[in-house]
Length: 240
Image 1 (cartoon, rainbow, N blue to C red):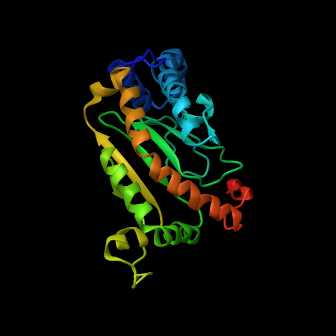
Image 2: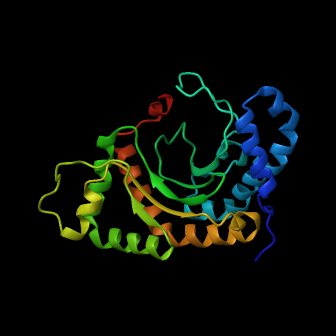
């Protein structure tokens, strides 16, 4: 294991984050703001720093700004049904700069009070845009299935939040069917062993998994670039 910036996210820090969420008051947050920053926000940013070299190698357009890549502890409740101001879960997203590349595929890491997870995902505001992924799968089925196998080797499980009910590609090979109905995609790993994130070994785990899943990110990135080239997705979409 190499020397990393990240030393772990401690159980007591997660407990404080939950207490902050339970109290849901500015007074409590301000009283414990420094502890929350040092115990939660800083370690999350350190993960981004420790992964930045690999991320740039995977995609030289990847944004690895630790401040912009990590969620905030407090929430913007404007226009949100839930008026709870503070989170008990945190995440980071490693992706291209969203103002120039809206809806680009991304890697992520997140944790909750009793679990954590990581993986890669591809969601678009325009569900119709995702047909470019379908087109690339049909054009390069071998490459796609190799990328799926790479994700399996990384320990990831495939899922889609939304699927077309109708068979959009009735003549497609059977092994491609589950993916050709998807309106979005995700390959993820989840665990309830919270001791894992209390150690720099987490960085080695993330690096190995993300590097193994590189073929899938590259496949999605090619599909995404096709969306940009055809004007299906435009930078102004980031204003949504």
